[in-house]
Image 1 (cartoon, helix red, strand yellow):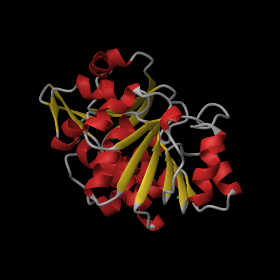
Image 2 (spheres, rainbow, N blue to C red):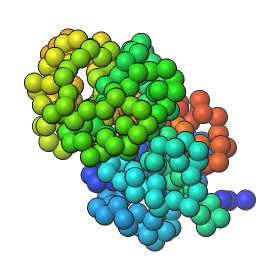
Image 3 (cartoon, one colour):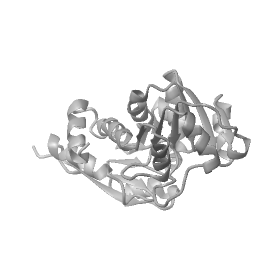
Length: 266
């Protein structure tokens, strides 16, 4: 019996650069699943739930800057998404939107090769919220650095060392991670050069969650001779977990990863 086509998408602004459609559609085709995955530029995060339902979707991934809006749009949240206050994967089941966070476990897997124990996040958005929690649970020491103090309140309430640019004195951290969208659309750095230079000179590695291009942050890390990685591996690993939610765990994750890697040519 032929199954009805299921429709999925990535929501974000910007979203034209996203490789999620290539990755998921490769897995749908390779595994014979009746799914189709597209892109949707969502400018107003408050319209996320309405857009999801109007488009007749079964599931979405959510990228910057709407992960906290996605959290508020859901009817049901898995325990980890509820804890961190950010959602990047939504699935429609029996008329209700179920929210998950696959960013954090995907990131945790992606940084293991660095052998880092102390991590500094540049930025305090939804991705940083989720990832800080799961890294701390795994034994990492996580510090947050953000342009302004307003978004740091949530981190401070949960016991994370958190600083605005004006409050911060550069120390020594194994891994420096750009958690912002700086460098995605323009040639900007995620923090002032006078902060980044001493941080990168003492670090063991650098990671940028932006993927598909050499950002100014990664370029600077390269000038310092640091091992570096963009967000491609994180994208892949969180995508495998999201695909499991989209398809209710029907497929072996190793096969999903194989087809997604083929689509991304990683």
